[in-house]
Image 1 (cartoon, rainbow, N blue to C red):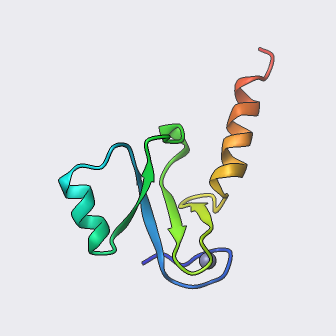
Image 2: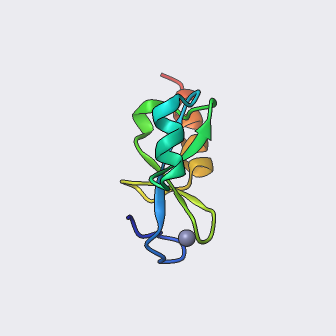
Length: 81
Ligand SMILES: [Zn+2]
């Protein structure tokens, strides 16, 4: 289990996006992952986790929340070339 950068509780589960198949459903039931729904953030932003304690999201590498990272990503797309 990963430790949450927001609250320090080591119970942050990997978020799996996309339509859940049988395997994903089972993994969720075992508490290994959480289902993130079909609206996936851009793949290049990396792996996301959801803290089961404070319910906040963070990026495994940067520690950013999905909202912050997404905003930054969109801003980078709009940069004039
Ligand atoms: Zn937390």
